[in-house]
Length: 123
Length: 107
Image (cartoon, rainbow over all chains, first blue to last red; front, side, top):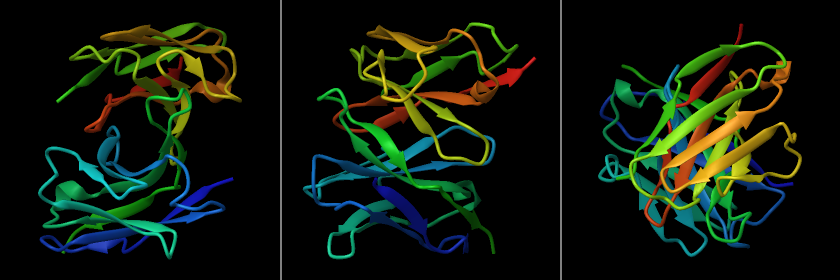
């Protein structure tokens, strides 16, 4: 079955850009009607959706982060990526990538998740 | 933007108890709601989609109901492996939104 794995630096300096990659295995990122998304979770807090990319390449982002977030896809590497610019300590969190499909035929839900990677913003 | 508010934020219960968690949306979202379970140090897993449909493989003691603005997740007979945090989530054309989570602890 499809598996997702996040990778990237665990430590980022304030004001720099956080860059993470999610590698998709046992399945093609460009096949099927899937969204591919990024979600984060600060320690002890709830889940926060950051953004998503559809198989066509169209993107949507969290309204409050829209100016700082970019999600892209590299079909040749079967990967999608997250860039979050101008980071502060408030961006310290576990970052998850996830696949979303529509099990009921209409609405999309996240059925496959990566294990998560911890990113700390600190000088 | 749509907001999801869960209640309670946490609850204590015993094995065998029935527990209900509520998720309220700030706007009518029809049945576009899911429930996830998350254990410490692990990624969330999908339990319920479209408000009341049980994902294949999820025990029948889990059930979801509701539509519009008010939704519930019920665990009919709490098992030791059910102690976790549960989050609701909404999908629409513009974004995904999560509730803040409900932690189910052992009494």
